[in-house]
Image 1 (cartoon, helix red, strand yellow):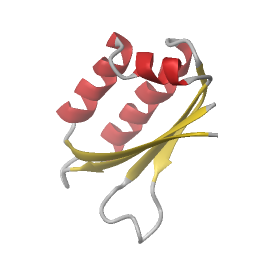
Image 2: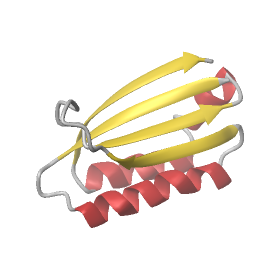
Image 3: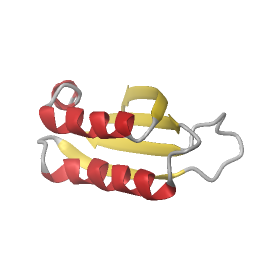
Length: 97
């Protein structure tokens, strides 16, 4: 299995409602793309986050499923929305479990 972790930074003017909409779109990918075993996302509450205010974890069956996820039209649509609402940086880590 593969664990994909992403942290997100947004402009200050990005609202909580916009972030909630983004998280809904991210969660919906589980029903749209094969190989996704689980998706979790929510707001950060730690003071150690260095400005990253939202997190995402996606568990995949295989590396092949992760490789399909990134460039897929469904995922790219969510990425476009994230940029539209003010995403300014991400940090991603992938590892096998």
